[in-house]
Image 1 (tube, one colour):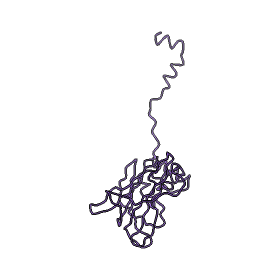
Image 2 (tube, rainbow, N blue to C red):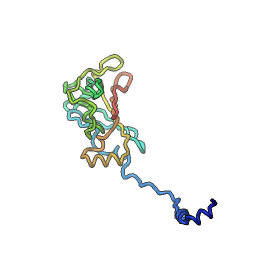
Image 3 (cartoon, one colour):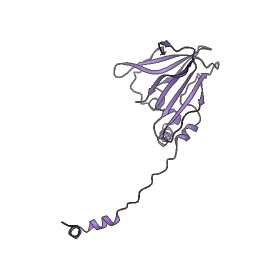
Image 4 (cartoon, one colour):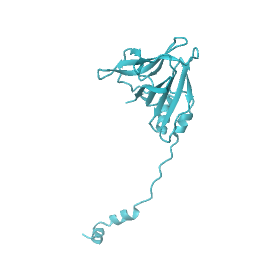
Length: 202
């Protein structure tokens, strides 16, 4: 059947063809950007015993990495013994869960990061892969030696769109900075800073 015959049988096709709109629909501009998140006051981790000092970090249109160096809130020391938390995973394995710091100046012990309470999954109550029991602690080992008397800093990364982060933060009553999905610990040494431990939300 040719086109003229088809239109005679079904003239509605002519209307559909005439009304077809080929003009592209512009996407709505985002209300928030990663630059807004980078400027947000506060710190990603709620550490009562530590002071987090913001350091310059890379900001892209769709991703942010924020970097902070820490010092003891009690005595001001910037050197710590670093200890790793491990906890029973739902799969039956014991897996890394967090980082504890022991101040070299005053020996105060502080939880720097705990996947069960911090980050996107922890703050939203979705970190259900770890048991509720007390985590086991051991010295963090790097290059075959325990990390002691070292300066510490951390990075957090945000891979969720900024608009979504701000919307969830408002609904849940948390700071948008707390909704990071990547954590990385760096320790200082004679050769400079090195990556010592990391965690990503699942």
